[in-house]
Length: 401
Ligand code: PLP
Image (tube, rainbow, N blue to C red; front, side, top):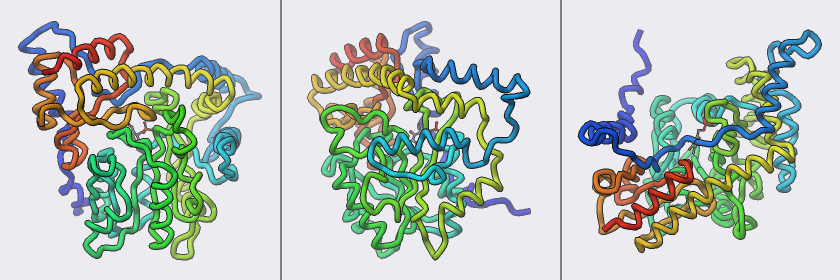
């Protein structure tokens, strides 16, 4: 048996490994030193009360004959599909319940969705990017066009930037993440419309990662879409993958959803029908208990409570942004995303800045270079830490010289 040899083309995911090595070495040399970890991409606040109550009810339901659930529908419990469709409805996006698929999280879907593409596809990844896009496509043997973003376009590349690097290749699939991990940059309606128009004209498919949509709020909200389906034409060219991980603290609980419009067709096939076929073959649905908990997030009370937690993370972002302002360096993100993406001060490289922050200030962030080579010279701070640690990290960052 010859295994999938594409795995040999994967690059070691050295980013978090390298960080862990450097941190461990520092702690061996300076035992007991308190470190301020502003690199984490995981949430730190517990689930909201509405979700906890519903999860408990779900457990109790499973204990009684009259309310017990066996296998759940593969594409999601009708009550949760309806709640998610209604959530989109509030923003003017009309979805049928069966255009919403409940999933066990965005990562799972970002990997599984490749089943719809077939083989030997050309995919476009806007870098810096969440590493799973590159890795999942490398495993499938797809060829990747990397579109580098930079300060000049606010880390929001356009189809013209793609054309400049496509070298005559025709893209099949485009990955767009907004609000973005790692840059925190958010596509405006106008900028996203340019990608939708490009995908519709070229019959490519957009995979839109909306994992951080709930962080969009405030003055600019009218201008910044939470969902690609808010853009005219997206129903004919885009799949949206979303998650409750960052929205509602579900990283360890696991639940997400994927939206595939029934208008989305390629090669005379309905991608919605194909995904129904895929899910009914390859999954047996998501736990009833989790779906009960997830549905509570979409109630009025649940929404109020998750936004109280998001406000705490956003306040962390504000505290860090003020510190970065004081350093007088360029940055993006932080306002409508839980990440701040800053230019390293004094012309330092990503890892040089990392080393100095750790050694001299005991603050840990994530070197931008780990998200694609165009991230060299940049650095990511996460806003998911505790408010106390974030305040101290910001205080130390201000002292950087
Ligand atoms: N997409 C992006 C852009 C992310 O940053 C993450 C997690 O950090 C995910 C997807 C994965 O989310 P999930 O926990 O739902 O698998």
